[in-house]
Image (cartoon, rainbow, N blue to C red; front, side, top):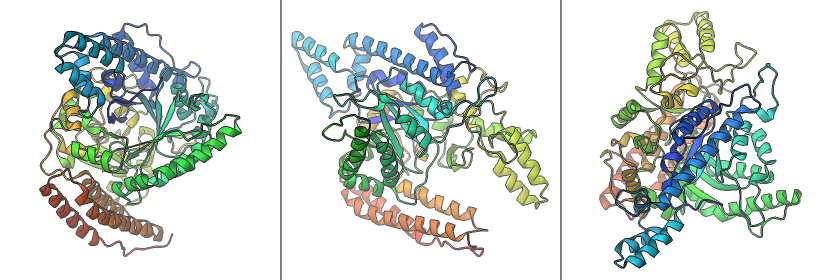
Length: 606
């Protein structure tokens, strides 16, 4: 049975631990969310915790056991499913009384929802028999939110068995995570992020769970997270040829988002959404032809028309007006609200200290960093326990992480076996190498700074789940890293679930900073800053390839500015003063961009 979405928004994956139990917190209210299944050690820890809460027996799945990673993930997802099913059964059976979960369920629905209209009719009905009948009807319409999962396709380390022998590619991290989801009882979607992984895509093509039944119903679906139309088109074609249908393209702003940031070529979110809006039918038909051919090769008769594709968008949305505009003008089927939910204790797994820091933070506390060992820009937060630990370790002469989980090992600069560049082993070797080069003191300090800024994301993005105790892998206290998007800088209230949902639907307004720009303007600002940073990094050695890339980036930003100039009059639900301010901010940013000269006294050929 497929989940019918009763809300127009979802909660995207948030780090490793922040949304790891979000379905247990919110799915019974019809709110869909995403669990990261990258870290099976964290997953196993959460299974132990929630088995105890649910009164279920817990049998550990040890690392030495065959296919332990996949089995841990399957066991946890099945536990989450059982807990949510019990919660929904209890909610359906509860009385329509003030403060009850069933009242909360219907009160949180959007006012334009047909279910909300039926609920309002029930509350306004004076006849007890009619009211009771309507309540029975409402109970049958209650469905939980989807329990979706996410894997970063690039996190796909090959593994060894207890005896040190290399296991086959089917036991790699990404494939084992996928298998954990596939073998679970969930009827939901896997969100693929971070780009192409041919080994993973090929393995997916061999999983019958992604093939629809005779009624066209999928047991498991695929959601592809993309930052532009081109990547959606390319990856969609690759998967369609393997007999995998993309049920949803989840468009995420390249830089105005949380976690790892995948910058575009300067093409902004508005123009990207316009491409999806104008090419949606063409995209579905092209992918459908490839998909049908792949099914026929397997001897499977395809449906008469291609399955549907949802288009959703996330990254930087902050007001009900922005949310509604995205749905109304661009025709997206839903929106994602991620970082703001870090301030909602009922929805996310965030320790109190970190949540208070986020609520009280300033705009400059949110920044794009080079902290990720993956070498991908990473949205970071100043003053986190993780940052403090990195600095303390360096001052104590022992930089780097013990690196116990090893999910991000990839570097072979000093070793035959890959190690992580955030590890203590790598950083000691790299710093020694730098010191042996007899660099100028200021240059040495700069290069060492680049080395030691890398954070152990495996431990630190999971650390919030261990606050109050110690992790299984270190004697140190958990040091929480948090990766909110820059949009969170404008939120300051630790809110209830009902308040945040009410804010999304425009029933109330959470306090936002008065200087918060429109989401499109904010993304433009972030992209201009990114362009400046990229130029600064290459100021001493700008290659001809760098020049071409940065020049194209600037040109695409100029195209985006022209697009937004034509878009402003269409923001009819915004006040005139708001549109005037947006126009002024756009003109100021245009002037700033025009003043950026992409040149260098050290232009060199590739």
